[in-house]
Image 1: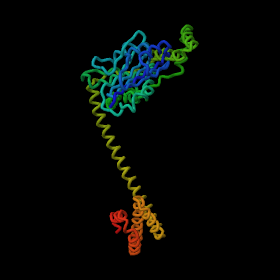
Image 2 (image 1 turned 90 degrees about the vertical axis):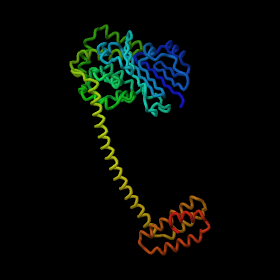
Image 3 (image 1 turned 30 degrees about the vertical axis):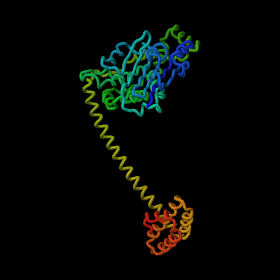
Image 4 (image 1 turned 180 degrees about the vertical axis):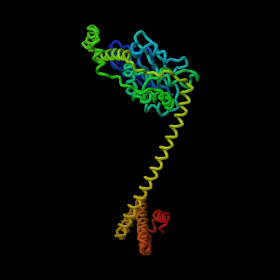
Length: 394
């Protein structure tokens, strides 16, 4: 199998400048480069840049997949999106599949899968295209204060942690993941039983969107703050203005919220593993029940189909009995074609005629007489005779 690697970067906060695009073009002459995207596939050679550096300098999201079953997803979010205390809760010295790095202006979140047995998923025919669209909504979720993707990142290392390791503050809504969070679970191949175990103590998700909050926050803005957003719009930086506006609003909203998002007593990894084992056993039991019910449904459906097929065949045979002579003539016509398909069709017709006579419980003498006449006409056609013998019609 040939080598295959896929790289995709996108800019969200602000588009690339002409100078930045020229800098990227110097790294790759084959890549597709626009003011918001860099995309390239490698079947030989390698990417000449440094993804984390590019995220720091140019882009807000990055996807990488390779057909040796590894993949990576990175996001860049403003520093005000996450507090240092929050970030620290999701870090662990033994965690190398999820890293959080701080720059002068942003946090860089880095999720990785370094080993997989799902070779089909990483094949070139699937590649990495499509993952960006599924995963990049996580960035907006983080801007709104949704920390579930960080917790899922921490879960990627659960099999490496010591039993006494405590989980980070558990966010609300782990039992009801968004489409992007489900995609992250699939991308990183996180054990679904582990996710279920973690979700057991996750409080229900509360929708904090409130039009009254919008008015209260807008009323609190100074004239200078409002002008700064309008200035970005006048400069044609509408997307950047929207991101900045949302980021500051959601930061304010989180500070105002009195709704706790974490449980009071974090669980040990050993507890999560025990819960995951229980979840696995229950899941397999449910799957076994579902599979049994499916087989029962299939058996009933197959029986009904067989009865219906037999009914239709019986009706067909009874119709044949109304004009047997025309069917013998039809069989004769097919036999005279002197080819395999003609012999097959003649044999089928004669077999149906035999079954029709049997169905009518009549004297088989008429059938034998007509069959003997047919055989006498075509007895030199050895291939046809072999077919009739095989069907026990001679």
